[in-house]
Image (cartoon, rainbow over the protein chains, first blue to last red):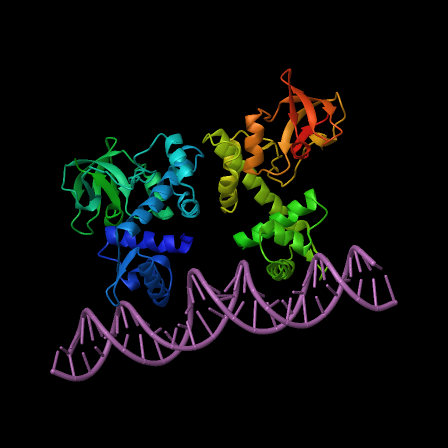
Amino acid sequence: MRTSSEEDYLKAIYALSINDKGASTNALANHLNMKASSITDMLKKLSEKGWVNYEKYKGASLNIDGEVIALSIVRKHRLWETFLVKKLNFKWDEVHEIAEQLEHIKSTELVERLDDFLGNPEFDPHGDPIPNKDHEITDSRKRSYLSEIEINKDVIIIGVKDSSAQLLQYLEKENMILGKNITVLEIHDFDKSLRISMNSKELNISERVAQNVLVQTN
Amino acid sequence: MRTSSEEDYLKAIYALSINDKGASTNALANHLNMKASSITDMLKKLSEKGWVNYEKYKGASLNIDGEVIALSIVRKHRLWETFLVKKLNFKWDEVHEIAEQLEHIKSTELVERLDDFLGNPEFDPHGDPIPNKDHEITDSRKRSYLSEIEINKDVIIIGVKDSSAQLLQYLEKENMILGKNITVLEIHDFDKSLRISMNSKELNISERVAQNVLVQTN
DNA sequence: ATTTATTTTTAGACAAAACTAAATATTTTT
DNA sequence: AAAAATATTTAGTTTTGTCTAAAAATAAAT
């Protein structure tokens, strides 16, 4: 058995291993809004339970068992987010907190039935791929941040880096939603802001925003 | 803020107040599978939080605030059970445990949207009435246990006393599902077992079963 | 290569929610 | 009405997961 708290740590280690360099004690403390000493304690415990590789002063990584657990939590999170948006008509910026709770519900039967009920979706409302029953992510799309795209290349919005409500609401307002086709027309030297074309209209977005928008390049 | 554990206690006090005589320490301990001393501790706490009336050696009852909370948990439990059966095709004997977890998810918006998504059902899969948004149960049906019905009266199955999987599976097997019309044909003196008519067929059921089947008499 | 700064760990404390065992109330029986 | 049985509370312990403050290790800067 495992606690919700343990699951949160595993998910955090997973997230930091994917997105950033690695899961150092301080990075985890920051990510989970906790003190570094709490992290050290839990890493020892997770290591004893056989889910995490941990050596003093060297941060943590998931072993195979730990990764399976992390991916099953991620799977649940993304399936519930999809449910909330597709079936209960929540907006994409409203679902994160609720899914943080729902992801800890224990019942494999429930997850599989939910998956079927939703039509076995490949991506969640933020464009993130949903791991399958076997805890695999099969996402063959080439992905970059919009800030790294060369001029005049056509790309498609497929996700966001962080799912903060502020960013999601901004994108919503500009109609920069998942699936939209975009072309970068110009990068302003002054502030690295972008002029882009979308729906045959043009608009400007800041570098900050571009760094947080994921696009498909193939 | 309240914890899941506190919510469990409030729900237990509510259940015991409705079904049985009242919520004594031992009755609660039994209902919650805990030791009496744990109950005493928590009753003090719930009393301090202003949800429960508690006097030493005299058991506990909900005050108005406590009852509102209890009913909101019951509402969530029954809505989620309805979701699991109606939308995810679980059987009625499989949903209790999962709903025990889901009932603690915090988001009033979620509950209201779920309610609408389900078509604002009045009863859950076990026939229990679902409290409305204002935490009211409006159930005008006259209800008795099947064991108390006089001979030759026509009644309708509307629920079960306890939702144990064993009972539910037995009823399922005998096709004694919610909504079925039943007439009690005979009560055997020997063991108080019943011969009943259902779907113009006859069958025998034990007193024990009859004591656990709720029927509508009006 | 020291010194300084940063990161991480250790040690000890605390709150929540359960437990056991003993003490005290209450209820029931004779 | 006293004795016996039952129910409840108290006191002290445990586990989990967090914290603070101090110590130790590592990394960065001079």
